[in-house]
Image (cartoon, rainbow, N blue to C red; front, side):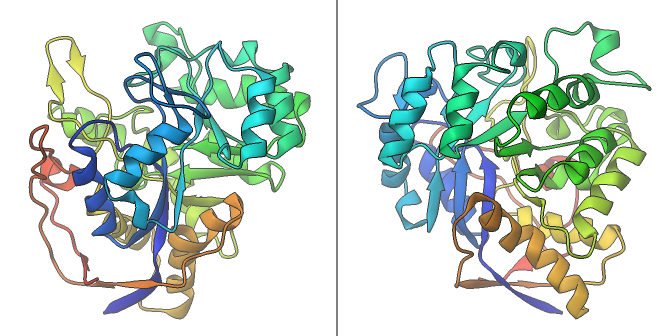
Length: 364
């Protein structure tokens, strides 16, 4: 079986900084990727819109130029969100939107994931001038939807977790205060979040990663498979089932691909495990495997349409740019992943770290 699909857009990924950026960009190009939304939690962060790179910050303009020099100039679309910090102002949003450089902003809960120490509590943004300026300009808010500063028992237990608390306590208030704000709920992991997005207005969408469609918390902790450790962490079987239902519902337009692919040369460190799964080079194959595990027949026209909408069409439609007119092919046949060698050191792709043989391969 061979699938011919429009080239797809990874609308949540990490290209980091430094000489290894070119390796990460190439890994995306090699898997039929036509463009990307590149996360701004770099070192230093992307916290300005224009100007040259400084010791304490990149601008969208300067980081985009670095990505272009690393090979991303061939992408059809490259979106770099502005990292929302306490230094972000409404004037910055208005001016940035007027330049055309500012298309999205990224919310990180403080210390919620890698390089997120510059973030602020959502309570400090709701009802404020920054989100109001974004609402006025049609600037998309990309949300890492977890409540911060929770104790261990509150962070995750059988009844609730940091994500469910965010989507039941913060998101309704956010929508009430900013009813026209365009929102992407990124890398959702729970039934609560999936149902929230499904029932929200049309201008609220969500990305879902391959790992959250394939794995559960049991896969992570049985043998401590640290290559599966990412934030938000994988959840329970009912959560995975809800995510699979969301992406495979006929006619759905709100859910789309965003891998949260995050390269780390060292995952296990003296102070804990680095958060992030690297799926560069293998994400479409993993997504296809997840769709099949969810019961989708990818040999049927209906199954192929469902998959194409999630992978290639819904994201561009939500972000307001055209789907790619170029195509790539995938073949149903076994394939293996290997270490990605980079100037910063080798990166272990998620399937290799999990001992997973891919059942699809990219043909080009």
